[in-house]
Length: 186
Image 1: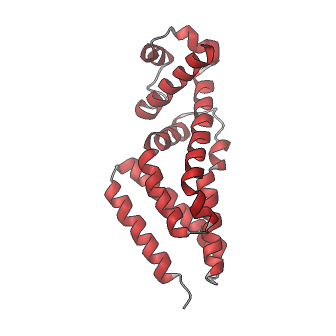
Image 2 (image 1 turned 135 degrees about the vertical axis):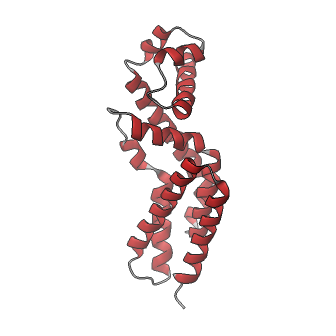
Image 3 (image 1 turned 90 degrees about the vertical axis):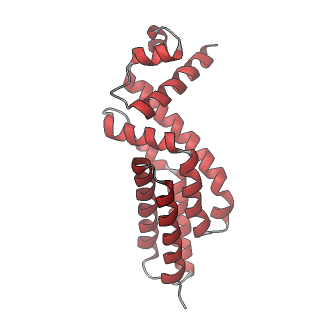
């Protein structure tokens, strides 16, 4: 029962932090939405910051697990196009998670975001991109791999801010065309 209560609190708080923001979500509001007394939250978490810290760690682990599964074949085959496509597929199912990360990074002090640096998808995307460019005999493969990661990350952030999935799709398609046509060695 104890872990069920804690899990319920975490899920409710995660949704509220993602949709309303950190500062606009009080512990009382979380308790009310969860249908519990606020004191129960403090049995599990010493502060709102501690609650957010656990949520960020949990969300990142869950996100990494889902992206690991989604990109397993593409990573094994060093398929850069499939890895970029995974960003599009992943963002559609991970909007709330990304919104939570952005809100946490911009609104919360005292939360350790080092877990965000351990992002599986972007580590694998960079490895696959570097492999792709090295295989093509392209100079500065590492720099181009970094650039691909930064572009995809920026596109995800743009989508979260704008909500324009069609624009994300068009831009990713153009990125893929550019990679295939401009960076292929003849």
